[in-house]
Image 1 (cartoon, rainbow, N blue to C red):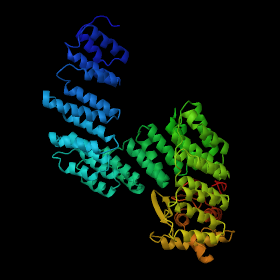
Image 2: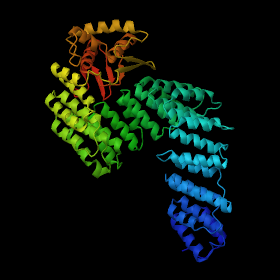
Image 3: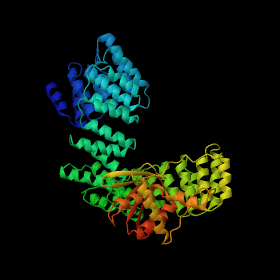
Image 4: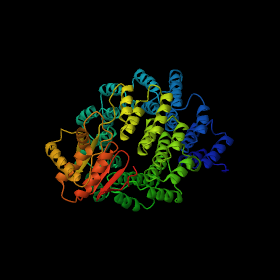
Length: 616
């Protein structure tokens, strides 16, 4: 216990922000010396100190017992901010209500900080209702013209994607700063309206690094990766990018498979001696892995003195999509030996690696121990990956049992994984069992499963059953995504869609592709058209699979690169059996390495073989 000391000394001690134990000793000294009633500044300092050490309950008890007439506005603001930080949005509303009632009685007046903290608290809730109530209070008290309060309102409405309300606040402002403009741009970006966000961005009188980060991250969030990189190049011509910009730009490169651009950004970071934070290093590992250079991802990782869980997770996920399951498990085990606790994404990454490498024992052990060992509750993604792992390995009944006994409702991805396993193992009887189960669970919502079963029958040549399913479905066309592939040449991303006709070189590409198909036919390639509709001729079936997007991208790459140059292609869907066969033949005939990243994993084609070893 502290000895008897003066009020001034106690106040000075509290201003030094001592630890909780010493604050309690000072608190006891104040009580024993009966100082609290005579010197309110000591109570103020105590409340401030308890809030600084996150002893919110003790601070609130002192606040509620504050001597009359009332705590000063500063303390009200500190309490409201403290509750806002712990995302308790009801208490700030309650305190504001109390404060406004006292305003009528003893003149406690809320200021701009009060409303800012309460609006920020409302931003963290799941309903806009309280935010709109506070907005009404702001209008009633005449704080709409305040720059900080208006900015907080714009930000709040942006978070809840109420862009019209955000814009209404913006246009009524008599004074605006860069935060006002940036908050409005962010509101439209979060709502997915990048055209309007761009229009406002162009009008901004002053732009800072946060403004650029909002635009670039907005384009990445909307899947407009080419636009994101275009804005990045425009930004660096004007100012130095921050961490958020670099991470988003590297993410865009990763999605596009743009190794040229990603490598350039890495060089820019080194040349300008930008500190490689954990986030930047994680983004670099992810970019190199998704651009097909897992060796470069390893180099970045190995240069990190003490990798954290995010660095490990990025490498593990990268190894997994390359089909390097054993390496993914090895890195995962290394992380555990370094006493780093995996998160849900880490476990998902290593399970994916086990799935693509047939490591049933390793994957099962990780899945069944994730909750007990690391406190990670399995989510639907983990169940889906485990079902895929079992199904690919041929354990169809066990995979079906897992899908039926999940603690969360299985989504379409889980059933797709199971039906894909039935297709891989050519087991239509089991596929029918799965569909019958789906029909009982979702009587009106199983068309996606019917399409998968139809494809399974088509792969087995059971066209009568294909026709029956299509009749049941009312001959509706499958609304799945259109096949789309990208190839990056010299930093420019070229996009191709199935049966593309809009690319500037499409005529030359079609001629080249025809030549390619003829040449690989001479070495034994025969089109696999088992999934194509049965009611067209064999010649038309071959033509249908010939114009798939990755084949067009490969033809374009062969036309525009030097011999023996590697081709890197990204596809939004799973590569079909025919394209897989064709790309193996092309890699042999043209002596090229062809690296394809489809929706599931990487395929590296060399000398007529694929890195997946037909396990995909």
